Amino acid sequence: MNIELARFNMIEQQIRPWDVLDFGVLELLAVVKREDFVPLAYKALAFVDTEVPLPGGQCMLAPKVEARLLQELAVRKHERVLEIGAGSGYMAALLAHKAQHVTTLEIDPALAVAAAANLRAAAVMNVTVTTADGAKGLPAEAPFDVIVLSGSVPKVPEALLAQLKVGGRLVAIVGQEPVMRAMLITHRGEHGFESTVLFDTMAQRLQGFEEPTRFHF
Image 1 (cartoon, one colour):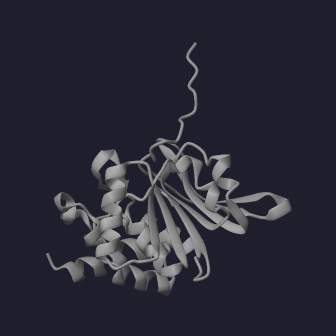
Image 2: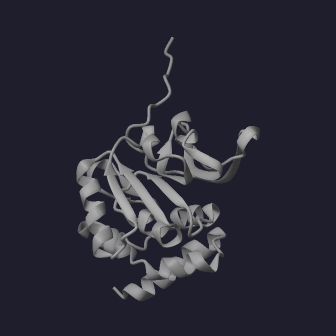
């Protein structure tokens, strides 16, 4: 496989048509080697328009979803980012190039070790990988400028919203199959939280987030 051609085609055929036009984001996708964060058994899927399976039943988000979330967040160099769901470490690597520091929480200890190894191998130094339940966030280090949920949740926990700075942004894929929506939530201070629907999509559920109770009569 011609890796550079596959990367180029991913950017031009999957990501640009999904309204990802920010030059900084497109350049980053060309620089950060996605294939280095994909498990060996799935290297052939590194640039395919699909979620890539990870150990423990988790997945990497599809490339166009990662790119669109990154664009909508507009992370700046002075900002501190909290990611929920480290996965392979790829989204943390993308965020790290934009932010001052990224802390990424992973509930699966084996995935956390793998993500940290991938980030070290890619020489990404401003990311801390922590094994923790992401649904609780990281109150000891809050508030954060940006919070990213790298997977889907039934709803955004209040605990995470409470850890967002005034002016801070949170992105999450929210809902139930077959309809989920990527949401951008901005903390407006005394005016509360402003929610914007970005796009409809589907994504693997993050571990540790409670499903709503279903009543049976």
